[in-house]
Image (tube, rainbow, N blue to C red; front, top):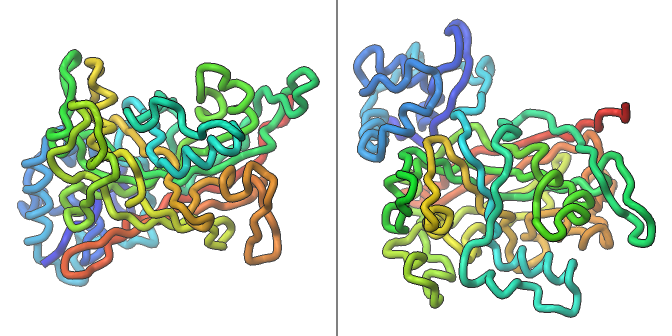
Length: 387
């Protein structure tokens, strides 16, 4: 028996062009090759992207997962790919991108830093998942280098703003959700329909230029400080694979408006890990998130906005209570006031050119197994010189 753990897209010689692949307990398998010999259903694989499969709906997702589990694969099966010769790609065409702010601890940490002496949480925070619409065109797959952005900053509040490369390049440890089945414009998606629309989970690094963000975000919020790059992991883990990881989030027991009430559990018990240049600097627990993904989807469609196949929405930075569980350098370094140490003796307040950031995650599986969600990695490269 072969259990399917995640789906992606890869190029792997001698095949020409991208192929839909599945990460299984037997290895990485070419799903199209199995379909050609009748072991997997559907004509969703010919495009070499996951989009058609995502749009096919939950019954199709469950059918293929079951067929992969029943597939008998010998160690030398031609459908098994040589991972060393394979190159993972962005597995779906990204539609819209929405980023939320669902960690109460992260919102509290930043509120204390940015608004000392005031209530760190805005009055609306515990009543609805706060979010913003991002730029889908700059979403890149894990392994893509991230160029340091340039922009307008105001490092001296008594002087005019300046232009140049960000001096406070940050990372954000996040979890993303990919929409499979679209919804109709004008019709909101209730929390109970979350599993009928969302295919699965990926890891997200929402790179952030904090100095650009702080200067421009008055009063409208994230814009150029966020839109230059967002990295996602190449593997999409189906929600049905994560059944053992389902938990209730704090808002499940809180007084919320009726459209945000959950009838089933959609929170996830994920263990995340953040490393910089090989040093683990944080282990954020996704189980601490206040808002669930079903509540995110319900809120982003409650006004009648529709979702499309390939839409991505992310949790916002994942942070726990202890400092070693915070999911951004803004928190870990207290916005630059307290440098963190790396294994080679170097210190960081924010990211420097050449730094490599890796976010990985695991989840509980059946019979005590530990499931990997893969990783998202990116290396910072210098800004384009001023022209």
